[in-house]
Figure 1: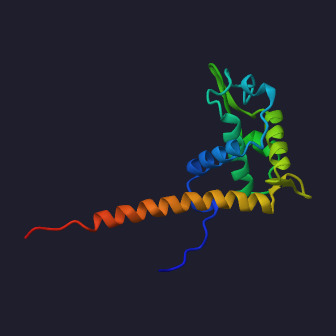
Figure 2: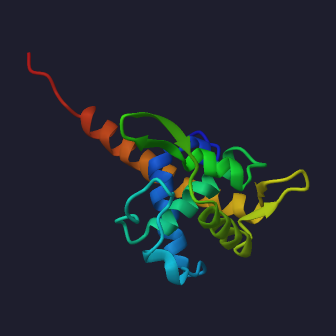
Figure 3: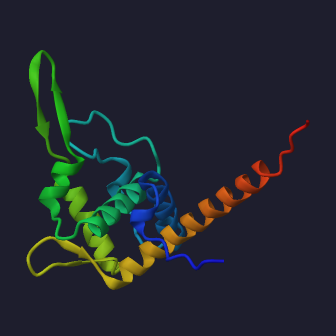
Length: 163
């Protein structure tokens, strides 16, 4: 049996990782939700606040993943990443940035958990504790998916053909 390299965040699908890491952040209870979490919109072009009760954890997991993949990203870059085109009726749409205060608060929360740290060149980078934490969650996802693949291959190879 060959020894596999440990899985990293790059090895697992983004949507699965973000859901799993958001659940991990919620279970840990170390992120304190602000009082305004149920009232705030994620951008000025939005009409309503998010429907999901755990949207703050999902956004924090998404931001942590983005910093893992590409360090040195700051609030301005995240405003652009999470922004989108604003619908202005019959006028052509323009890109509108996401809420900067919300992103800044999430980054500060991740800094207090020591998942990210400020870079000397500007922006945020993933810390060694954060890299270990994110890789641990990715390893769990990869081991589950390997187990699922192994069980499906063993069940498909046991079929017999009649002559």
